[in-house]
Image 1 (cartoon, rainbow, N blue to C red):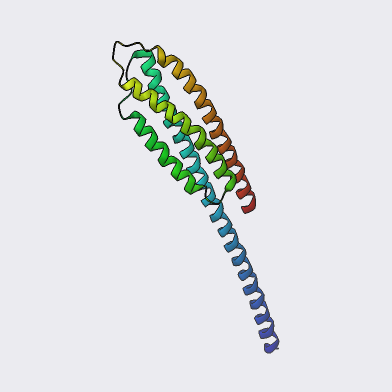
Image 2: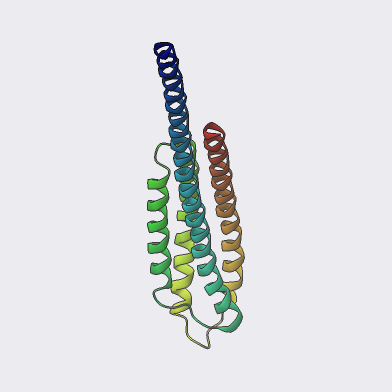
Length: 178
């Protein structure tokens, strides 16, 4: 009788060990999936922050031109260079973050093309405001500000398209990990 109980006990132990192993494997795969989802979420957050910083840099340069138009306060001499440097750095970071996602890289390329033309015009306007005499006419600034505002609208549309593409990619990645 003891031998029968020992066989049964060994069978029960083997079943328990197999069940624990299966549960450990399932937990391991779920943890791996959650780790991937967390990494994707962090990357998405970083992309969004960089897109917001990109918009802020362009908007800040346009605001400096608006201040010049309203009060005659010239933009800082290095404002144009600072904006260009900031945008180039953000674009580089975004390009690195979006490697492996061709639709997002295409959207970034469209944003970059729209932004470069605007940057050039904003640079010219900021340099002109920085070198303007205090008593000189600022009438040119109003039309330039309006024109650049329309250019910023195009860039904002490209930013919105990139955000939308990022949302889609994030939702797709989270659906896969669920």
